[in-house]
Every structure is written in structure tokens, then in C-alpha cells.
Image (tube, rainbow, N blue to C red; front, side, top):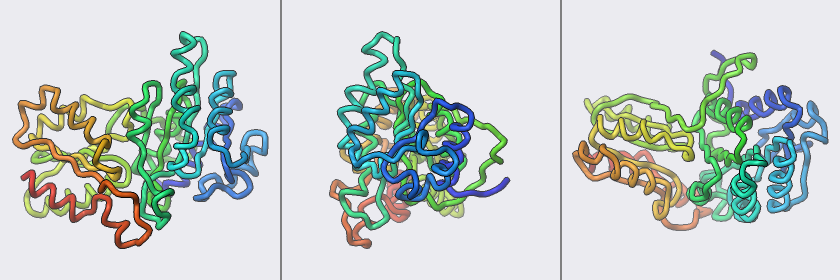
Length: 326
């Protein structure tokens, strides 16, 4: 199978879906002629033109509100918010309109829109362009939330998100854009169902539950422990909402030890939801140790690269947490 980058996989998913369905449009800041802040949409303006790939003013609130309205009238918009930090500017339309309109109108109007946005730290963009805010949107009924970790997952999940009749927040962690992975040829129209976790590595002694760019770090730790005879299972939840509760509970029952890892601040992070889910299930009676969370530090992301690297879970801190659980 061919290898392409995470960014190329996202561009392919959008382009293939726009060729398939003329009602799909793409809008955002600098996505057209410039090709996007991270180069994800290069070539799309030339193929689809300025009616379907629309450069917008710098106003996240208006972009998101326009998309919600367009979705209710029959279009299927894809919105790019240049940095996930700027979702803060779009929250009124995303949370109070897009997430609620289908319910508010008794199902008479669907809101089939996707809000794509790059999140996370590691690029030296400092505290206003490096946050991980997925827990905010997970808290809102009516929104689906997706964070893929591989090019294969990014393409399959984005195509599923575009075809969904509900608003989907699709977060792409910036340091993954240039990573490569196997992806089927464009003619293979594969879809990854939302709400299905993926066991990236099977194990029997401990479960690491994670998502996004923490997945490769968890796999690196698991491989190191395998050399010492310890078998670690790594589960990539992929979609935070809806969450594959069955997969998480089953793995916790199998291994008896659970470590939850995410880049976002630990306080109020999505790891607490996962821990609560497992603690409230029959898996609780199979646990040999308390459920452990490992998130980012409760500080703004520093500009200094050495400090920035240490405020999120590292291979070393994940290893330490595993040793404590074992």
C-alpha cells in the first residue's frame, strides 16, 4: 500500500467527497489560493473554484454561523478554523446554534457540517496557538468530536464526518501533518465509522487509552516494555464523541490496569470522562490498581521549546506512569 502524509490524507478525503457531492463546500481563512496555513488544501482552489472553496474574512464567529445556516438549507459545509484556539471565537454559533438546531426544530432541519481545526503544541506557536481544547466541545450535546492519529484514520474518519448529518468537530494535531502512513489508493472509497476505537497494539498486562499524537508515544513505550516481558495494550479511541465504551471496558477487564494519556491539561481533561466510565462499569471489579491519568500540566503552553516539550506527556513520563501502575 502507498504511503502519504496525514495532511495529504485529509486533502484527499475532502477532494474525493467534493467530487462525489456537489453540495459540499469548503470555507475558511487562507484555504484557497494560499492552500491553508499548514498547506492541507493545496490544489483544491484550482480544482473546485472560488464558489466551492471560499476564502473568508478573519471572523471565526461569522464563518461558523454561515456554515450552520448553509447546512440547514441543504449544503454540507466544511469549515477550517486556522488554529483550534480560535474555536473560542466561534463558540456561540458552534455551541448554541449548530449543536442545538436539529433538536430545537424537532428534527426538521439537520446540520451536516464539519469544523476542521489543527490543535496541540509542539510548533513553538506559544500559548494562544497551541492549546488542546477538545474537552470543551465534548461537553456539548449535539456535537461529535474526532481526533485521528494516523493518515489512514484521518482520511477514513473525515469522509465519515462529512457524510454525517450532525455537526462534527474534527481536530488535527499539528505535529502529525507531516507524518506518513499507509493509505489505500484514491479509488478505494473506505469509511471508518465514527464511534469505533482501534486497538493499535494488543496486550495483556496493562491498557493505555489515548488519542492523537500521544498514540505513537504510547506505542513507543509499549514496544520498550515488550523487550522486558511486559505486554501493553494501546487503544486509540479516535472518536471522543461518540465513544466506544465497549472496547474500553473490555480492555480494562482483560488487563486489570489502565493508564489514560492525553496532551490536554489533566484538570478537566477528557481523561476524567474515560476514568469515570470505567470506574462506573463492571470493569471496576477486575482492576488490580487504581485508574491512572496522565495529561498535560495545568499551565499555558510556553514559547521556550524546552519548556514546551515538558508540559505535555513525554515518553519518559508515560514510562514512569506505567512503572507506577505495574
